[in-house]
Length: 360
Ligand code: KG4
Ligand code: ZN
Image (cartoon, rainbow, N blue to C red; front, side, top):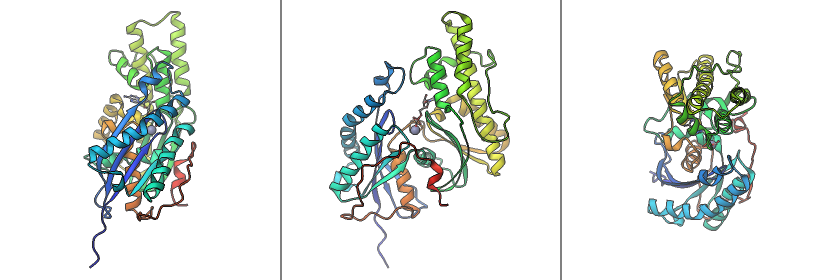
């Protein structure tokens, strides 16, 4: 009888935007056993970008360069491993900021070349949508995924690893962008999502009837660009800076508008597909009001909703290592052989549609 295949250790590198994340996972050959996270380390650039009210791409790239190697060392130390234990390197190749992506890609190529292991490009959104597989309640396939991040808002039908069909997406701003831009208008700083959510806690969500574009459209698309304009108009009408209470009411009304659209479209996607399982991924998935609303509706309708662990909602290296590990287990990547490194191009795809991953 052949000896069982040894587990593979995959290093994940995330550097697509304003978080530098590295992680090491161990993947067995049997897809019934999910990959195991050995260690992960993260540096958020939020404090650095705060002064500018948003991410400054060139500063982001330079900071990734400073953080990547110390974070790699931390992951190795925490997992009790050495560089030679890495069997493959997975890195975010897109979508994201070109310069930021290149820093992770360059580290992946250099490590892979020096260790004689493959470097695997990973789609950032595939990382997000598979990230609940690292939670204590991993979802079985098939399911509908609501991907809500700073750059994307999409509903996908997920039939398995690498089998993703786009059901609908935003025609303009992403949900996270709507949070961020509205927060900026309200003078709440960056990143706007958590700041606006916090400010909304003491506000009245019914104080302002803000637009919910495409809410009743027959499709599963979203549109959020009008929301920040509506918030700006309300502030302008005041003719002065809003008081604390006015700010809280506007924040609560903005959050209510975004969440209502996300919940109703998710419900429509479940109805259209006939599925009863929803996975929520991406930074906006950390929003407590969104979670409460989805959970309440799920209870009434008999669905299950799965979330990644809170700390894995926003960008991180674990989800990138995980996506590669699951691809390996499902035969979408070749088992790495030490000393047989693939071509190591430093190549990224700042724009990369997720449904290109699915077989035609
Ligand atoms: O997935 P992510 O970390 O990065 C991207 O790939 O974009 O998502 C970041 C987005 C930002 O727009 C941020 O404001 C939003 O997620 N976000 C939140 C919350 N935490 C992060 N939005 C609403 N409520 C939150 N608690
Ligand atoms: Zn992300």
